[in-house]
Length: 239
Image: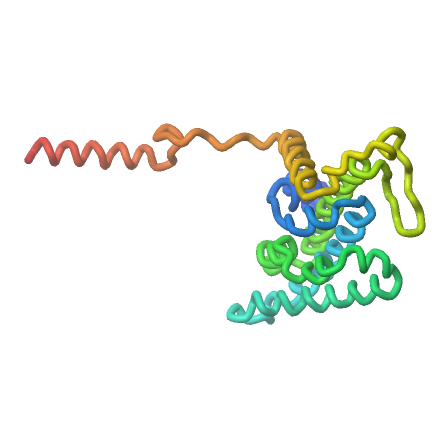
């Protein structure tokens, strides 16, 4: 029974970032790179995997050092750790995949202050053990990558008539769209439209309920409030 519970817990930590707590489409973090680099699917994959690398590595280190880092300098320490891994992945891409490095541009460096990474460091890695922190980073990173890849694919197919196009390969040509592309989809307006559609679909899949109507019936303090109201009315009558 203990092994089964442990397996379920491990699986839950890994999969929560894919749909249920997807950092882009559910918690709406990392909007800047999401909208900026997803004009092509390959850029989305590159940014997503780079962010996943930084997420996993920073979660690992922060979890190991959570009892060593003083609370007064917690956030600056997190940023220094994250910045170190961002610098490392930047050097790797610049050396081995220069075309992707150029395509991502300044947004690769801005991974350092990405709300997803800082959020997981503060909310999870700094409070949990190493293995769950690694799984959390991996799941959130893959969820982010999946979001960027899906969004980039839709925008590239509709906006250029190609899919997975690179500098050295023209990608898969889509009939009709390759000669009659809808250019708005590779513009900012198209990015916002596709993002909104994906958010709606993912929230429907995750069965997220709309917020309850605000009223006294839904208030957790309704009983206390009612008693106070009765006491006030009695005092007024006595006066």
